[in-house]
Amino acid sequence: MGSGTKPEVIHEAPSPFGTVFVVDEGDERSLRFDSPHGSRQSVFLKSDPLAVPLSYVRVAMAGLAFTQGRSRVLVVGLGGGTFPMLLHQLLPRVVVDVVEINPVVVEIARRFFSLRGNSRLRIAVEDGARFLGQEGPHYDLIFLDAFSEHGTPGHLKEFPFFEAARRRLAPGGVGVLNIAFEEPRGLAERIETFARAFEDCALLRGSSESNNTLGVGTLEPVPPEPLFWQQLKQLSRELGFPALTRSVVSFERATRRETSTREGHERAFPLLTGGREDPSSSDP
Image (tube, rainbow, N blue to C red; front, top):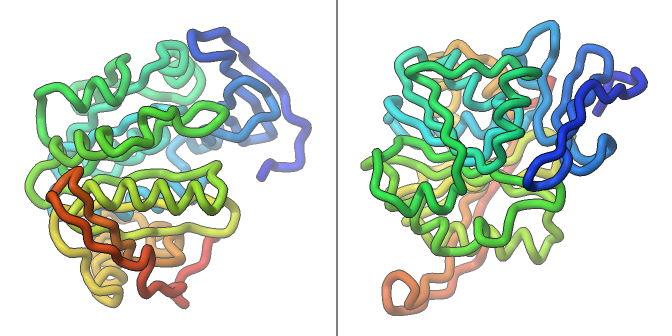
């Protein structure tokens, strides 16, 4: 949602993956692909670059409630860099690696979205699937957030990609998948494919201002719902980030259909179990 001010394109750049636009609406600056009227890939406030206007970015931070690890995070898909910069601010000891396939997006994030790399925030220009398929460090949290104007690239929706992400997790680590621009059938398929790569999976949703669903794939059983809300509030206090508990409005446990792809047998489960809105949560 914009500020009511007429949008102004302040930068337009061709890239190997289509034209990239930077659009200002009052205090709000957004990154868009292919069209200045396209969906907002990233948003920040010029008056407060570390503010987080899009709720799904805040919800992604809730993935840390499922793990005790706070050492190393991987982000696949940079956008304007809101999530990596939020991590960098709230967790002063964490090392954040970012993989972004489009060099123009990296340049724009640095020039227009206040992204600053250093020894704790490192950016690689590379395909996310190729990066995860290589040998390398293991991560406490991997955030899969790669999009074009038309949604997630096809090879980043497939089981081998999620399995590669799982292999790059540290013990107790979690994979977090941002799902958007999907019809109901496509959403169900994305969730099932993602969940199948992990031991267990939870679904988190933010405020109604976006239709994003965040999948959290875990290496251990997902905690019962009351314990999740307790851990989320504890994480919010640990980070000094009270908006976190207000941003997550629902928790569901996703189950999966196990096939010969991983374990050589098949067990069918209902896709979703449980779930409710946290009555104490509301998006500001």
